Image (cartoon, protein in one colour):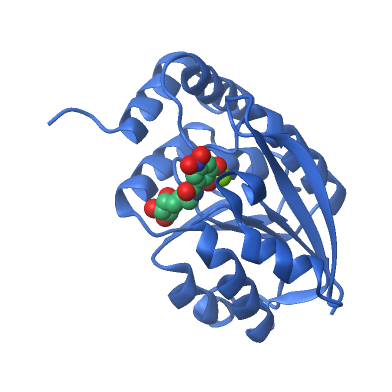
Length: 214
Ligand SMILES: O=C(NC/C=C/[C@H]1OC[C@H](O)[C@@H]1O)c1cc([N+](=O)[O-])cc(O)c1O
Ligand SMILES: [Mg+2]
């Protein structure tokens, strides 16, 4: 039984990145996944769009659904203002264990809370667990067929406020057609598509930014 892909990504970070330097962690993962072994990080092309939307929103409370190895957790947390926080939800405990180490290697452990479990179970418990009113920003990057039910759940749990920005990965590849239909034909959202490419490839993909109008 050899290592897993997430374990190899962690090794690449420990070998090539500088402890406490988030940008070097991002670059080490991008280099490894572009030249050695593809992995489902949002990546450097779509990552620039994530960075710019995040900088514009400057959220106090951010939520990520689908941590995987923590690549986008690092991208998000490195841009948060002091005292702002990211909660990231990961279903797979093995992924969460690697993500925790990668986020810590970047020195961002105080800004990021990794929660293990199913988003559908965890979302209804967030207000009480974290004493929060609502999220300012949500990055959707988990199972693509969970984007719609979890968005509805966030609405129903009062976790979105007027102006909350949802940013969804992979709306073209692998695709989230139901989600695009849901946010684009919905008077409660103002949606815009950011064209890009699937991480580390030339395949078409993009991010959908949807502002909740309350
Ligand atoms: O399935 C994807 N993401 C959802 C991940 C699902 C699994 O990893 C995290 C989650 O807990 C589950 O165990 C995905 C797939 C591709 N892809 O090209 O196949 C590209 C991407 O950017 C993706 O986010
Ligand atoms: Mg993705």
